Image 1 (tube, rainbow, N blue to C red):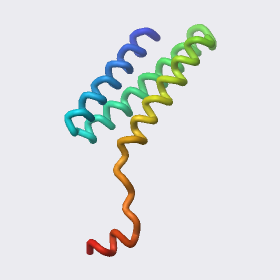
Image 2: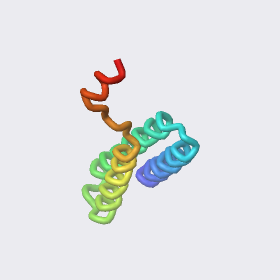
Image 3: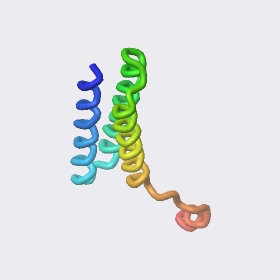
Image 4: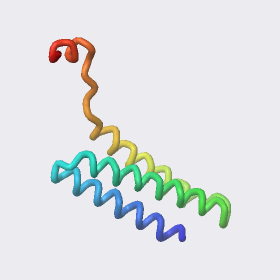
Length: 88
């Protein structure tokens, strides 16, 4: 199951990247959140089945970090209070 959830997470990241390229930011973020959940499920499953494996742990940490970085990069910029007052 660990291999399958890693592949599913990878496919979700690719799908999110494609959605981002076609300017569907909301769909991209949703797919990336699902990818993070798949990676977390992989980590939990691996720990339950066989304990911690250093290579698997490193792969999961890098996958989660990369996916979270994609989420952070696509976040809408926060508008300042002055900008909000200016538009009202």
